[in-house]
Length: 172
Image 1: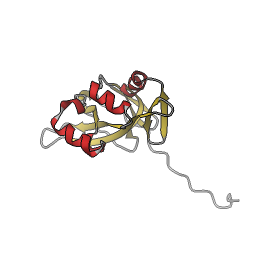
Image 2: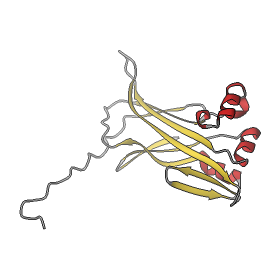
Image 3: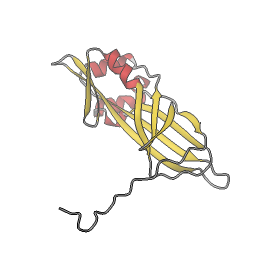
Image 4: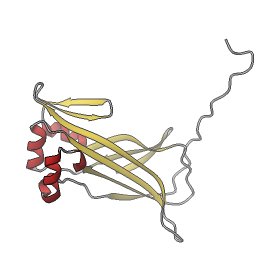
């Protein structure tokens, strides 16, 4: 996992080491969509109180199978991508690129920050019978450990662009 500064803020790139259990592979292949949550947190350590949470972000990814087209679909928001095999869909799911996690309006102090990211299967969005099974069975649970790393004294992000008011007489 790594953060990089861009004009709009901080972008996250991360690779996850997740393998579906055989049961989860069967579940998605039989038409039940799987929802994955990617969670990001950025905090500043304080010696005198609890750590200050500077930023947090969540991203939801949906993995599903469509029997008519015989393709797996990976989607987030309005973006969708189709794959002929489950393994190809999983390889894209594991690679997260260019996710804007911190807006440029966030101010940073000249200190180190702790960043953490993880991916997990959201069992709350499974159908009810699977939710009950997930409580007792580890076959329906999937979660990467938190990947923690330090962001060393981040550079100030570019200042927000101020909207200029039109000059009088310049309106058409």
